[in-house]
Amino acid sequence: MLVSGGGTNLQALLDDPDIAPSIVVVLSDRPGVRALGRAADRGVESVVVEPSAFADREAYTVAVRDALLERGVDLAVNAGYMRVLTGTFADAFPGHWLNVHPALLPSFPGAHAVADALAWGAKMTGVTVHLVDEEVDHGPIVSQEAIEIRDDDDWDSLEARVHEVEHRLLPAAVRALMDGRLVVDGRKVTIREAT
Image (cartoon, rainbow, N blue to C red; front, side):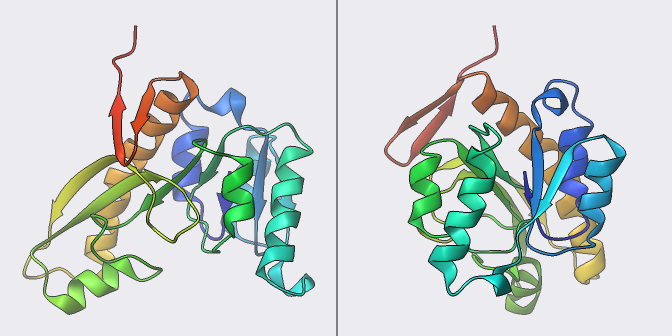
C-alpha cells in the first residue's frame, strides 16, 4: 500500500477481512503521517522513502519499487499516495497496480480533483478506481461512481462524500484483483462475478 497522508483509504483496506491479511507493507513518501500510525496499529510493517533523498524521479521510483519487491509484494495500491512514479514501477506491477482518484476520470485528473470540480462549477463528480500505467490518472478504469455536487458544497462537504464512495469502491476493486476477477481488454475492464 502506498500512502501520503491521513490514510482513510488505507483504513478501509485494513478493515476489510479479505484484504487485511494480505497487506505486507505500507510505504509512505512522508514520515509521521497518520497512515503510518494506522499501519502500526494493525502490526503492518511501514517504510518511509522520501523523494528528497534521490537525485530524480526515476531513482526514487526504483527505490520504491525495490522496497516493495524485496517484501514479496505482487499487488500495489495507491491509497492516497500523492507521488508520480515512472513507468519503471508500472513495468514491475503490470495489471497489478491500482489507484483511487476523487473524480470521474478523464475529468479532473491530478492532485486537486475535488477543488477543481468545485471551481469549474461542475454538477457531478465522483470516484474512479483504475489500473495505473505510465501516465498520470490514465490507466484502464475498473470502477466509477458519480456524486452530485450540491449548491451549498464546499471542499470539506464534498470531500467527505467522496471518501465514503472511495472506501467502498477501492476495497471492492482490490478484492476483485486479488481474486483474479478483473478482465482487461485494452482500455475496457470487466469484473467477473465472485464464485
